Amino acid sequence: MESASHDLVVIGGGPGGYVAALRAAQLGLNAACVDENALLGGVCLRVGCIPSKALLESSEKYYEAKHDFAAHGIHLPEVQLDLAAMLSRKDNIVQTLCRGIEGLLKRGKIAVYRGRGRFERPDRLVVENDAGTTSLAAKHWLIATGSRPAAIPGVELDGDRIGTSTEALSYAEVPGRLVVIGAGYIGLELGSVWNRLGAKVAVVETLDRILPGLDAQLAAEAKKLLQKQGLEFHLSRRVRRAYRDGDGCVVECDGMEPLSCDRVLLAVGRKANTENLGLETMGVRLDEAGRILVDSTYATNVPGVYAIGDCIGGMMLAHKASEEGVACVEKLVTGYGHVNYEAIPAVVYTHPEIASVGKTEEQLQQSEHPYHKGVFPFRANGRARTLAEIEGLVKILADEKTDRVLGVHILGPRAGDLIAEAAVAMDYGATSEDIARSCHAHPTLAESLKEAALAVAGRAIHV
Image (spheres, rainbow, N blue to C red):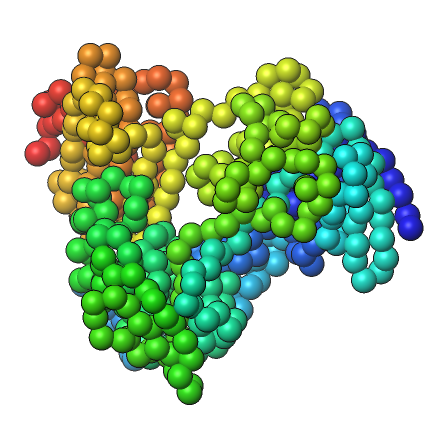
């Protein structure tokens, strides 16, 4: 058995783990990263954020070529789908970015150990792979093992016809009919991909709305737009069973006829990856959902052991994990590290995109927090008109007394990019008037944020 010792060993090579290791190296620590997968980058890069966005982009271009180019005076012969080429492009993007992470860690002189890491005791981690076993010692341990798709009773996953988002990224052919269980961002994004490519997509959701946790007004508007695009919704329907039936599948739900389909995508959330790490041998405390309990510095109840990202709960977002990794390491070395959880943006990459940061209107109402609201529609924005992307709106919520921005919610073109301005504004404690008085270039989509900020005080110009 080989052995090695480091200042910090990070368990998990995803966006929380590898970023933490890189920051640790910048700060002078002898850092290492342990990951059991052939490619670094975690779920986000390998089978999550990046491949799904690649398919969303490709499928949107295909849909536009078939349906929207004529309005621009562009007429094409019959548009044909080469799904194999589309999937190959997606895979090449993933592999290129994974190699990039390998290069970053190599340049940072960070040791990478391939294999499954398991604690034997608080000061010893054993990494096993086909080539053998390595024993690691460290002053500090950082657990960044991420999450995996959650399962529900009655849904018989077979990794083929009935699968999770991982399988839905690589269907060899467009399913004639796809049933998506769950109306969160994963289900709607991948449902949109296959809908654009020609599948008939039905989305089943236990709740009476889509996108739980997002602003209800935007979620309702998004549902209307997705229905226009062809998605079929069955809300307030609990799935009882999903099973193979010959070459197809059947999904049984409360209060409706069974749905027959070619494939089923289960997308009902994610579960922390904390099993088989040896945490019980050290006495690391978990909550009832299997998430690691940490304090404000990401420290567990065991000295020297820290955790970040999906495995500690909260918003399951790659950028949140990265911020936590940096904050945790900086706290260890400099004595200060902080994440402003009130200013972490979230994006849903449907068409149009949906982006949010801060409090929703429902949260402010429930807490009886007095606020003012400004709304501006994209149909009144010149740049949106030139893009032929006029659906959606920008909503800004500001404190009634101080005018400090409490939340910003965007449904519309390139919302995922536009939300960055709002996140920075909130991080610096800006008021809606601060945004309103900042000069925004014309013609740009960002002018819609300025107009929504003006609307908070009833001063919008173009509506």
